[in-house]
Every structure is written in structure tokens, then in C-alpha cells.
Amino acid sequence: MSTSWTDTIVALATPPGIGAIGVIRMSGNQAISIIDNLFPGKSISSQAGNTLHVGLLKEGEKALDEVVVSVFKSPKSYTGEHVIEISCHGSSYVQQQIIEACIRQGARLAKPGEFTMRAFLNGKMDLVQAEAVADLIASETQSAKEAALHQVKGGFSHVLAQMREELIKFSALIELELDFSQEDVEFADRTSLAHLLQQIEITIHQLLESFKLGNVIKNGVSVAIIGKPNAGKSTLLNALLNENRAIVSSIAGTTRDTIEEVLNIDGILFRLIDTAGIREGADEIEAIGVERSLEKMRIADLVVYLFDVNTSSVEEIKGQRELLVSQGKQFLLVGNKIDSNNQAMLLQHQFGNDITLISAQEKTYIDVLKKLLAEKVISGVVTTEGTVVTNSRHYQSLHKVAENLLSIRKGMEERIPGDLLAIDIRQCLYHLGEITGAISNEDQLDFIFSKFCIGK
Ligand SMILES: Nc1nc2c(ncn2[C@@H]2O[C@H](COP(=O)(O)OP(=O)(O)OP(=O)(O)O)[C@@H](O)[C@H]2O)c(=O)[nH]1
Ligand SMILES: [Mg+2]
Image (cartoon, rainbow, N blue to C red):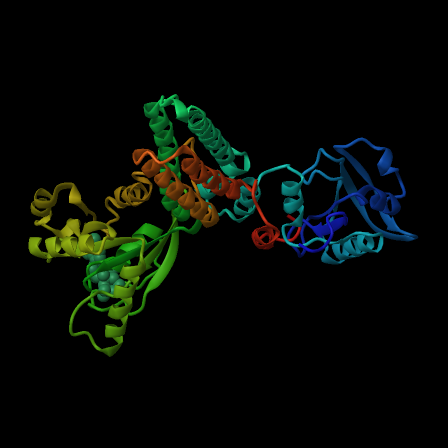
């Protein structure tokens, strides 16, 4: 940001529009002198930090509103600077008047994320924490909130700091060996070096792995319900949502276009997609629907292949399973209509836990299916101290760290000189530093904070 960091900034911190109250936030050197000019009832500059004051806000003779002024004095504030928060009545007009008065007194309008950016630059939080603030504000589910809050509180930063420490320890051992290289003794024990390296690699891989879950937590997971016409896909969508969203009929080819709805299971957001039944020889419109179904299947994170247990053969289900495996898709095979069937036991015997049996119409075992969907997403994810990587910028840097670690390991195996190893270690530390912002540049910061809302 080219604008000066010594400016005092002001912005509405609550959503624009009418509300019970609105909060206007001001940060910077002049924040207190500005409020002193607008708050005649009391001298704010002579008040202690972390205090609240009720009174009339006035510009000259003009009363603006009756407000509560919260005072935070530097460095004990969100940004680390003097911060004033004015809680006023929630009228857009009143809020606008107050902001304009602050600007006339010497403040300027804040840019998106500028408060948080100042908090970062003043060492109140690292970049990971600052970015998690934006995620926390945007979170729509319990799991998204938890992942973001964990990062805001410094969970991820702590893991990174530990790793950094380990790396430094590692590099110290290498350098020690360098000092003794003339004497043909291996001072730094190779096995303990390798062990240390391995520990760091495990952590990095866990973090990289957790991004799969992190991505799901942040963006939701798309589930395509695929199958032949009349399998009961639309009935299943309705059962999962517990409402009559999609049209159900006994006519094959009822659903012609895809229908998408969101469902929250155990704090994970699922985007369910009901599709047109897949069959040969459909009419023109249905054929377009079938094409769309296949496309949805290709792009979905997870496929539910639904089949009618009355009419599906073992071969057909096996064929479907092979197809899905060959496509490398995550999938669930689900047999429907067990309420009207005599073949279900046979299929269960044949496929065991590979298939899940339900009745969409009678809503039997829908809970089991929901549980399986959630498990499918969470399974196999091991987290490091509960940290889930949710940010693709962090993911990319972690990837570079992993690459550096690999070349360190190779170098050790090939017994390359210690000073060459040290170069890779420095690279590693550099990429770790990128994540927390220990290493950052202005363009990068501008980009990150521009995605925030104004007032944060
Ligand atoms: N007995 C029984 N009938 C079901 C069940 N689920 C769906 N049906 C019936 O099967 C027929 C087809 O259901 P839909 O949900 O429209 O099937 P679909 O897979 O969406 O079909 P298309 O949209 O044509 O591809 C309807 O008559 C449903 O009432 C079930 O669990 N048991
Ligand atoms: Mg349908």
C-alpha cells in the first residue's frame, strides 16, 4: 500500500445498512485527538485505555449522535496503535455523518484489511493469523470456524515455529560437522541427523495432507448422485435434504437438468447434485441432461452411484465399481429400494461393506449414508496438533518446503558437502518464513489484504 502508515484511518466495522447499532473504527496516532474534537463531554485523552464512555458526539454545534466511545491505547489494541471505536445508532445516514466528521478532523478512509495489515506490521499477529481472521469472518460452518479460529489463536504458527526450530537445530549440526571436516570424523551423528530430518518431513506431509480436508472445510465438497433413470436419485436428494426439492416420478427420465443444493453434515458443507439418469437412446433434451450428468461426475469430489436393488445385476454393479476406480474417483455404491426387494440380501452377501443399502422413499438408513459421506471426507487425515491447512498460499509454500527437504535428504544420502546442504536448509527456512510473513514483500501483502472487507 502506497498510502502512508502514519495516517489515521477510519471505517465502518459493522455491515453497511440499518441495524440496531453500528460501529465505526478509527486507528492511528491522531485517533485520540480526533475523538477529543468530536466528544465535548469528556476529555478522552486523559482517560485510561480499555474504557467506555457514553456521550454526545458533536461537530461544532451540530449534534451527530449519542454514542459509546471505546478507547484502546497503543500498544494494547487490535492494530497496536491508538484505536477508537464509536458505537452509534445503526442508521446509514448517522454512520456516514460520523465517518465524514472523522475525515474532516484528519482521518482518511481505511482500505480493505488495513486494520489487520497494521496489526501484522506492528507484530500483533503473523500473516497466518491475519489471513485466518478473514477466513473466520467468512466461515459458514462449525468446522470452518474451528479451523480458522485455531489459526487465529496461533495453532498453525506454533507448528511452523517448532519446525523452524528443528531445522535450525539440524543446520547447526551440519555446520558443526563442517568445522570438523578436516579431521575425518563425523561429529554430527548421521543417524540422528536423518532422524531429525524425518521428523520434519512427517510434519510437512501431514500439513500437506490436511489441505485436502482444509479445502473441503473451506469450500465444501461436491457430491454427484449418479445412476440409471428411476434409480431414485431425486428421491434420495429429497430424503437427504428432508424436503421435496426435486420432482420424483415413476417415469424414467424425470430429471432433465442437474439440481444443486447444500447440506451441512457434521459441520461439513456438502453440495449435493441430483443428475439426469444415465441411459442410451434418450431423446434430444434428455441426452443433453445425460451429458451434463457425466460432466458433473467428472468434476465432483465424491460420487454416489445409486442403483435400484430390484433391477441391478451383480455384473452391472461390479462394472460400475471398476469404472469409478479406474477414474480415480472417491465414491460410494448405494443400493436403493430395499423396502420392495428380495435381492438385497444377495447383493449384501456379494459386496459386503462395499455397498450401502437404503430406502430413499421410506428414509431408511439415510443417517448411515450421511455418516458415511462425512467419514469419506475426513478419513485418513492426520493433523498436526489439530492444524488443518486451509489456505492455498500456505499450501504452495509448504510444497516448496517439502521439495527442499527432499533434496536435503538426497544430498545426505549422496554425502554432498555440508555447505551445499546448508543452501537447501536456507531455502527451506525461507519458504517457511513466507507462510508466517517473516519474509514478505509489499505486493504480496497488498494482494493478501485486498481480499479483506473494509473495516477489518
Ligand atoms: N419402493 C421404492 N420406490 C422408490 C424408492 N426411491 C424412489 N422410488 C420410486 O422410484 C421412482 C423413481 O424415483 P426418482 O427419484 O424420480 O428417480 P430418479 O433416479 O431421480 O429418476 P430420473 O430422474 O428419471 O433419472 C419413483 O416412482 C419413486 O417413488 C424407494 O426407496 N423404494
Ligand atoms: Mg430424478
